[in-house]
Image (tube, rainbow, N blue to C red; front, side, top):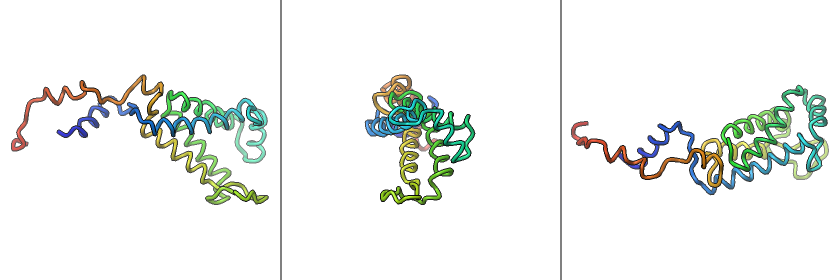
Amino acid sequence: MSRAWDRRHVYEKRGGLGTFASKSLLIVRVVLGVIFFAHGAQKVFGWFGGPGLRGVVGYFRQALGVPAPLTVLAALTECFGGLAMIVGFLVRPAAVGLVLVMLVAIAKVHWVNGFFINWSLEPGKGHGFEMNLALIGMALAVLVGGAGALSIDRWLRPWVTWPLAWNHVACAPHIPRSAT
């Protein structure tokens, strides 16, 4: 058996929820978290010049036809999903929530404006969905790879690569290739 197969086998036996200590996942996770926490805090608390929950609920209802409970859910998902990304706790469920929020944003707001961001700030034309797509890609990377290095998720459930993971291979009886 190859070590790569054995690693995958041990990973799958543990439920596939381990987190590799990746520095690149750390960077993606934290940047994604900062972006979503800042936007969510604008919507929920009115921080950073945002309208707060009351203003967001009114705008989403009037301009987009989104019911208040779904608006609150989206705002809380952005805020606390972003916070979850920053600290690296329950990042996979948070990533799913953030992907769903971005898919709704694309469908309700950005799709009609095409792909590109409106860098010229042309009046009457909103931004396209390219930024939403980048955020979805970042969230999917975290969903697949886990929280990465320096995360609570990694501390709770590390990716199994320590020597004990190889013991079942070393103790297994040798089966000649001709017998299989």
